[in-house]
Structures are given as structure tokens and as C-alpha cells.
Length: 85
Image 1 (tube, helix red, strand yellow):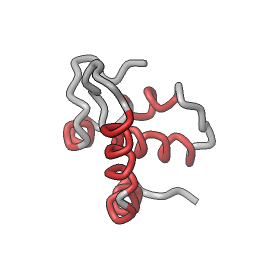
Image 2: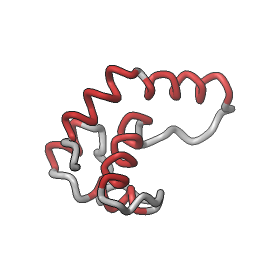
Image 3: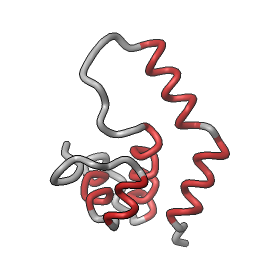
Image 4: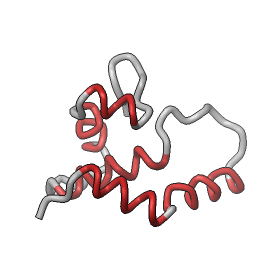
């Protein structure tokens, strides 16, 4: 069964999982390079990749870069050339 992107986004937003993970990162990590990818976007990429039966972290890059331009902008993927490893 394939779940739509909008259903994945609704699930994540209702669960507040991304916000929870963001809080954990903020309280437990030190200073470092700013993240270019939000936790929410990473989780969306992981869920899309997993439903395709290719659940491997390195494939999330391919999944996110294959999204339409308008979706990438909405998810905050603005890097020239797309997401990198």
C-alpha cells in the first residue's frame, strides 16, 4: 500500500515527532555546522524511501532529489543541486 506525501506530512505534523527530535538535538548537541535539512524533511524522505521497499539511509538523498521542485521548496530543500550525503 502506497501512502501519499500529504498523508505522511499530516501524520508527522500530528505526531509532533519532528519537533520532539528537534528539541532533543537542541538540548543534547554542541555547536556545529547548521543543518541544511530539517528533521521533518529527513523523516519524510525516510518514510517515502521505506514505502518504496528501499529503506536504506543513503537512498533518502535520491528520494528527496526526485521530488518536484515545488515540493522541494515547500520542504525547505533549497540547496543548488539538491540534497547531498
